[in-house]
Image 1 (cartoon, rainbow, N blue to C red):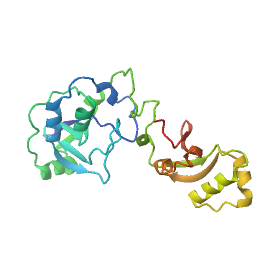
Image 2: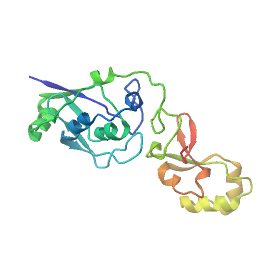
Image 3: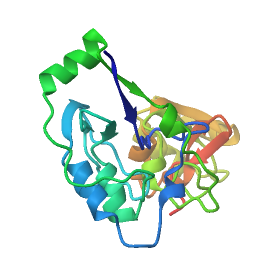
Image 4: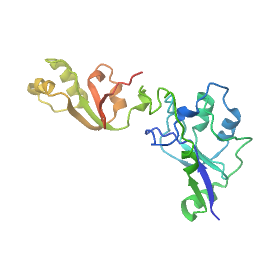
Length: 228
């Protein structure tokens, strides 16, 4: 007999999932749901990734594991942080603790035998309209540093006409082999591609040059410097 668990509250740091619940829809001003947080923290880890997730709303490292109670739900380790730190109230009532899980059996049942499956249909049905998207949320017009993509093409734009000194510093930053005699032409040809698959967050840290650095998106170029 197959046991189907519900996946819940996967707010990916990689961007919004179309028509899926938005974290901002569950943020409240009331007292945190401490019972829910305790239950979530008592779950059993059965999968990990190499680098921590980041909280969508504050950017803090937010766990690396996927947890389960073995009976009803599967969730990311950092979900308790959303409940405790950001007042997220989920459409589930949890009491007590998750209880023990036979991890070896669970992993085999999920990955090999098919005795356990994870279904996202219920969670997806919890989508609701959101009046205000908080800064950091992927649907918010205000970008935070943790919203920057991990990899993107990096472009140069906005270097003033004749500012060869700045262009020379950009040349050094990129380790580029641009001819010094051609730097004025590069300024005239802005915007131009400087790095493919670069790290926007890394270039955001170059505070004296980041005003001239942009990353490519489907909607055009955006500054590597976040809004706040």
